[in-house]
Length: 553
Image (tube, rainbow, N blue to C red; front, side):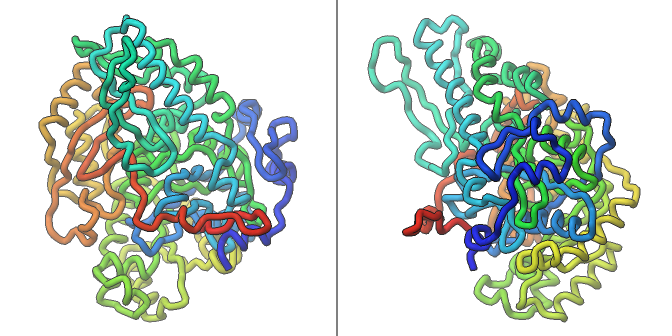
């Protein structure tokens, strides 16, 4: 049975009942139909003196085309904690339409571990990403309108891009203003995908509506001939942008198929942006639940690194435990096993692929000082011999293993992981960052590359070095680093899965995001507007004769 059918065949509770289960008063939710709601910002104020619950981060090995089921694991764990009578709340990202219609498909979990209503969440949801797209493009419109009416601020270079929440490689570079109307200045522009927009990053790192407006005003949209930055505040665009986001900034409440409350809010990409749900949602969840399960995007080298070095630093958060998700078939793939043979037993390829998992564990445990458990999404073709091999290898590193079957069994299939997480979160840890903010931009990038990726060094292009010098001149060198890199490898080469030979990280360019308050580092061949695959998921998505959505997986 497809995920969408499992979700549709499950009778959901009204969102009022879900809110009541975690003591959210009816006056603090605004319903979007029967099963979705926005949570009032006043609720956090009421709860701000309440002790926080424990924070559990779910991350994973580098992703493969086989899928690892990180979101499914996070949902299963939350349901599993509820099965053992713990008050658990989920805090997850919103899906982008780009992957839904592209190569990845939906992002609401799978099997019996899903958040619902899955069609709504995967498509337009409560309109948050549309609001972000509108705010982004309003700013673009106001830039070009200002130039049209005389360019009083002295734009010499525009650095702000338009965006759309779809994969469309044709829009990576476009010529605009070609109508030949009087005063229109043609220029080369481009589009980012909405979830890579700086406004999405700001949205997820803001602490409240006032902080949101402050950060929006700080966005650098262009430069004068003297290299003086021009901001959204200079254009008087920050107020209108804030108005467009005033409802979106409030977190969304939904539920799992087993009625666990889920706060789903914000969704920046992890390979391009910082890959975490909103600080507002996570902090609210910590007041509502005794255990909060959240996830970071893609592998731990990207998602967890940014969660820890950017989000935790900004929000003064500390995970009490980290779950690193893997599958035996994905580990064999990382070991070089051909995709068509992946169901066959092979200790040799598993041993080679184990190095990917090992690196992530060592980073989480030794670079960041956190308590770690490995959770394996179990498949029927996993053999006892392969499982025992993995257990033994992890025991040598003093790391527990949990076999999870939440896709098939829901929370019941994650009870073992839930019980182990409860014990793990009681252990003390010495959380630390991978780098200190006081270091130079180059040193911080090198720290991530060497400590987290295992690179031998970093090669900076001439353009990157010039950008770094400009950022230092403007006084922004003490911001954290957000590295844009392929998710498939520790290196910046998507095909270098095993990383057996020494490698360098190649920095193409460095971009200041003054509103988000981090510095984006573009490496390898990364792009900020993805394209569709040869056969996109969109080809299978349709309405059946009864008007039901089909094909989202």
